[in-house]
Amino acid sequence: MGVTIANYAIKDPKIHNPVPVHEVLPLPVVITQDHINKRKYFVESKWFGTLDSDEEVFAIFHCENGAKASQFNVTKSFSDFKHTFEVIVPKKSQIVTCRRGIFDIDSFRFFFKFEHKE
Image (cartoon, rainbow, N blue to C red):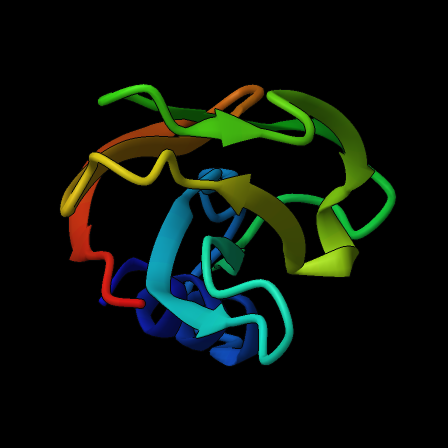
């Protein structure tokens, strides 16, 4: 909703000197299992918002239950709108809990779970 209002305010000549809006919105994650190694997953963390396209942000990712992420803090440009993390799940885990986020002027941090099946 904030993105639409900010864009409308910039285009409307009746609204003078709109307040700058900075908003980062998380989009749903996309999780894909590797076809060869069934314990390996690719988690695509996506975002959208009103930050400057060349603004530097930090994509954060961490998993629990013994799952290992290939990276946990990645520097990106806001205009990339996504980063893909690799996750290796131990054989004993069935439910994997992860946290993802973006940190900069505005930020978000969300937990999500997925079920591991071999």
